Length: 87
Image 1 (cartoon, rainbow, N blue to C red):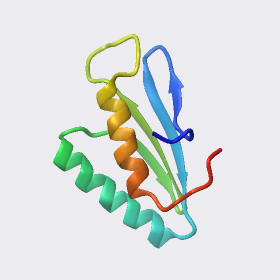
Image 2 (image 1 turned 30 degrees about the vertical axis):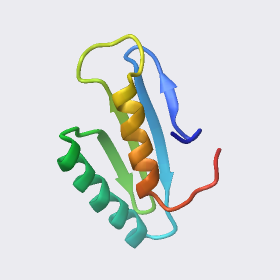
Image 3 (image 1 turned 60 degrees about the vertical axis):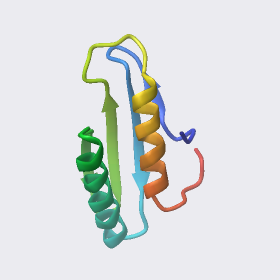
Image 4 (image 1 turned 90 degrees about the vertical axis):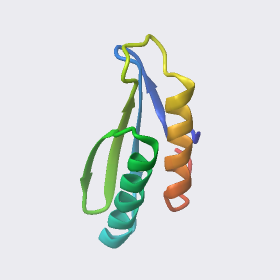
């Protein structure tokens, strides 16, 4: 999981903003993220604009810490996104 993900508490969750060079890149990422959601059966909270996507991964159960399943999902999303500099 990249360092671009922020771990938040109350509720435990992961947050990240993905930046893209163009609308087409944003759209391609959203399509891939939708395919991943269908395949994994997990649907993250997303908001997006022309060249960015903000994503929140939150456990379906109320947990005190981010679990391994969410971290794995974050890694899969990192792999879908074009290479971006670490923040």
